[in-house]
Length: 175
Length: 80
Image (cartoon, rainbow over all chains, first blue to last red; front, side):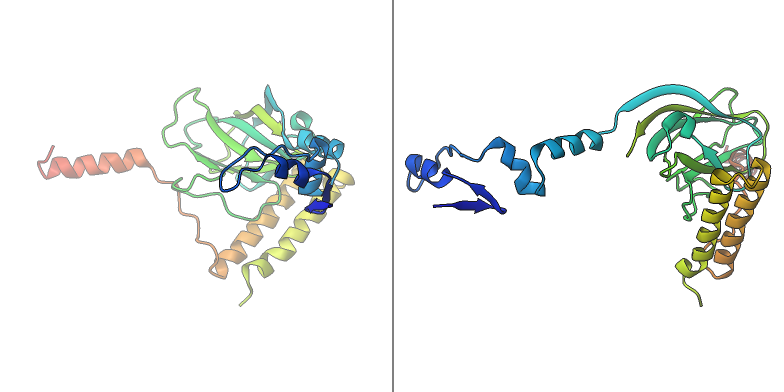
C-alpha cells in the first residue's frame, strides 16, 4: 500500500507502525519517512534547496563601530546612506546618535521611503524615534532602525546643529 | 475627500524618481537632492495635515521649565 503525506510518498511507513502498535495505548512510531523527504512535505523543495534558504534566512550580526554622519543635522527628512557599511540591501541597524549641543533634543529615524510619521514633539511615542530632553555632554542615544533594500534610512532633528554625529554600532544584514 | 493613500501616492512616486535621478543617474548634487527630498516629504505632510490625517507638530516641551513652573506654584501655595 502506498501512503502519501502532503503529496510525498512515504513508502513502508504503515507496515512499520502496524508492527509495533499497542491497541488503546501510546506506542513508538518507527517512521520510515526518510529525513531528506521532510522538507518536501513543508515546502515542496528538496533538502539542499531548503538548507540554502535556511542559511540565508538567519542574518549574521556584525559589530562594526563606524561613523556614518558628522555634520550639521537636517531638519527635514533626509537620506542617510548606510550601504557603505551594511551593503546595498535590507539591514536592521543599531545606531547611536550624539547631539551636537543642548539645542538638539529630538532625532527621528525611519526606513528610506517610509511615509509614516515618526517625528513626535513630546517623544511619548518612540517607535522609530528617539528623544532627548536633558542634554548631557557626550551622552549617546541609541536607536534600532531598518534600511530599505539599498541600505538607506531617513532622519531629521528638531534643530540644525553642527557637530552632530551618528555611528553604526552593529547590524544584521538582510537579503 | 482624498484618502491618505491617494495623497501619499504622487509624493511616493516623486521620491522614487528623485532617488533614481540622484543615485542612479547623478543628476543632482547632494545639497540639491537633500533639499528636493525634504521639500517633497514636507509638502506631503502639509497636505496630510490640511486634510486632517496628521496633527500640526507641536514645539518640543521644555520639561526643565515645566518642572520649575510646578515647583514655583507649589512654593507659592506653601506646599514646599
